Image (tube, rainbow, N blue to C red; front, side, top):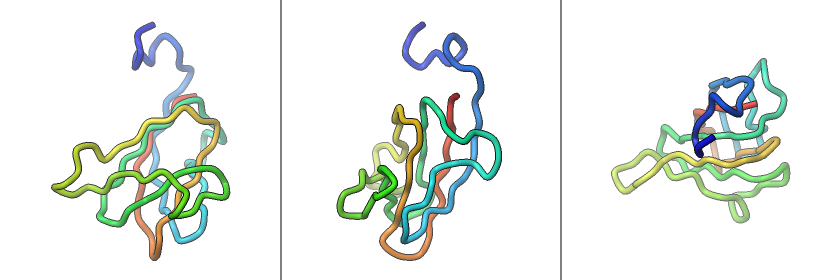
Length: 100
């Protein structure tokens, strides 16, 4: 299979939104998958979102680019079993598609 060819390797695809908060928030749908093999998420707002493991922080997380004119790509793809997101203050929505 070619990279990105979901039909040959995937058993299911699920899209969902996560409201990231100022504490580590699981990147998971409200129902459905409890883990996944691949994840692609994009930030729709202007508040910077960071992703990482269960102890993610804004200082040590990987930033997901915000949806602004200065942004080349506002989505991030990773191969993980489970991820978490965090913002410095308030909340921000992260739109995701997971492959299991």
